Picture 1: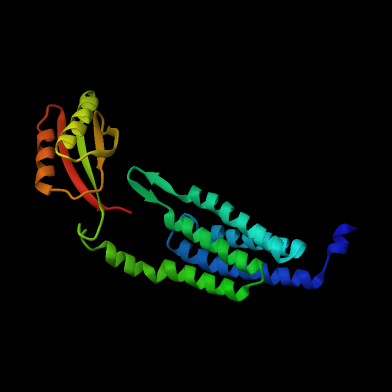
Picture 2: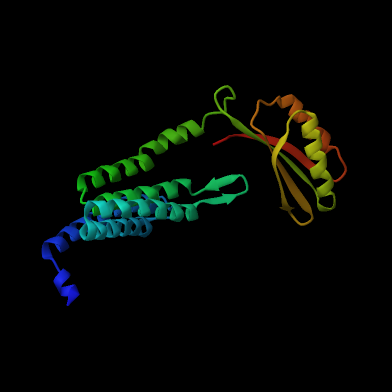
Length: 238
């Protein structure tokens, strides 16, 4: 009987509009992600927006705007955990940051719709879409530019490919020679390379690098017994 007493047609129609708006707007965001073959696509972004709208709308109906505000806070933290699961780290490469941020944006759109702020939900969805589409050519153009040390903090990595029996020795040798050249190692990693070799990667602390000096260090390491190749590379640091 309690369910029948709680049935309220105007409130139900209001909920339908809120969740329907979240469904459409979240679907728009997800469609763009799906077309680009991203991990979180049409269904994921739509479900995030709809779920946020349902929770906020329910809190709004049960406890008014104050209850909705409390639920929005939980939605924000909950989507943070969901987004963290979309972020992957493979060696020095990190992927999924944009996917996580998009999920956060979809949740914000759904929360606005659930709070009956349809205008704000539409504006938020448009800006999320603009961030993923209009800014893409700008990002690609910037990424194609060479790294300029004067304005960019670069990350330098030194790589050594050697036989596995000498990898422990080469790891210590690499750290010592870089330290002697005033290039302290921030992080070092090693993993199998081919059938009987290993690759050692030493990430240096962000600093200005003398290319000729670093070349001399890698050439000296490359001349050691058991070392097949030694080289260094630079990339823009986040």
